[in-house]
Length: 78
Ligand SMILES: [Zn+2]
Image: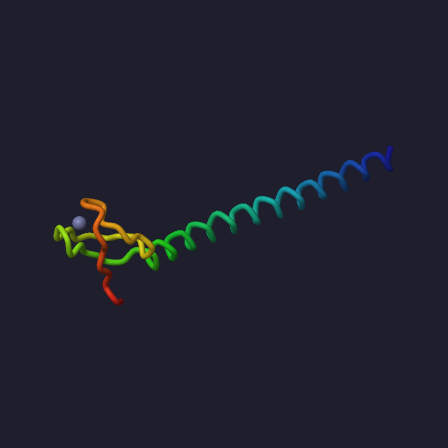
């Protein structure tokens, strides 16, 4: 009886540790992805304009075509 109780308690403690560790990891991953996404968005979006039709706006750093006319986009150096 004593042995079973000890095993049960030990099992609960292990599961608490496992769930606690998983919960902590998930929380950290969510926080990290949120911060990383914001960081990436800030870095990848630049001011751009189209020399063909005069469109101006925010575009991805890797976007080369104007969303309005498909012409070549000009990017801010910074
Ligand atoms: Zn254009």
